Image 1 (tube, helix red, strand yellow):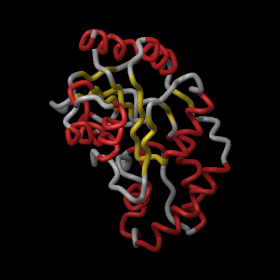
Image 2 (tube, rainbow, N blue to C red; image 1 turned 180 degrees about the vertical axis):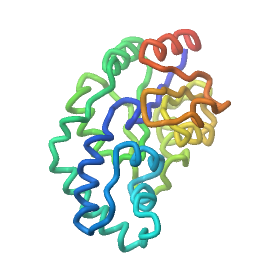
Image 3 (cartoon, rainbow, N blue to C red; image 1 turned 45 degrees about the vertical axis):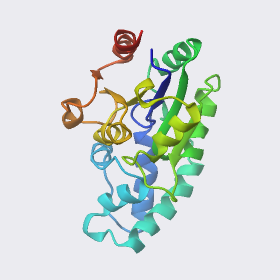
Image 4 (cartoon, rainbow, N blue to C red; image 1 turned 90 degrees about the horizontal axis):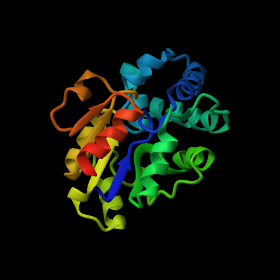
Length: 219
């Protein structure tokens, strides 16, 4: 059995895309930039907020424009009710079961740590995360393994004692760069390129399959 389970956040633990798009479109409208649909936003996911905004702005992605949109979006999002952002079905139960087995649970994401903690405190107060390692402007974002390595150090486990659970090519690259196993879920914001990648040890379509995969591989 693995000792450490590291989860991606958006698209793996929580469904957050609709609230992000609502707030991001409000910021884009302030500067008369084209808005986008949830599907168009998902196509640009993978990096940190600066990288995502840069892709959204396309040929208008000057450093100044990126900063304008980001600094307008962040307070809009922070003050928004985020009523559409919830854990995916079965996530809470899965995490509780893992915790009952006395394994370590952590989060590694390109979302900011404070934003992740807002949701975990609200929806998962009973889960004792070893570490929540979100985006930090002082360090490279995923797929850099820096966040994973910090979690591994705090857990004091070997690389083969950990597994990364995510939904995208960025998560696969993160796990690969950290030299740990990876499981990919298909209910998030990934695509066929992730699902057909050779690196993950398993690709699962729902929570029951994820739990089965954990049992098959590690118990």
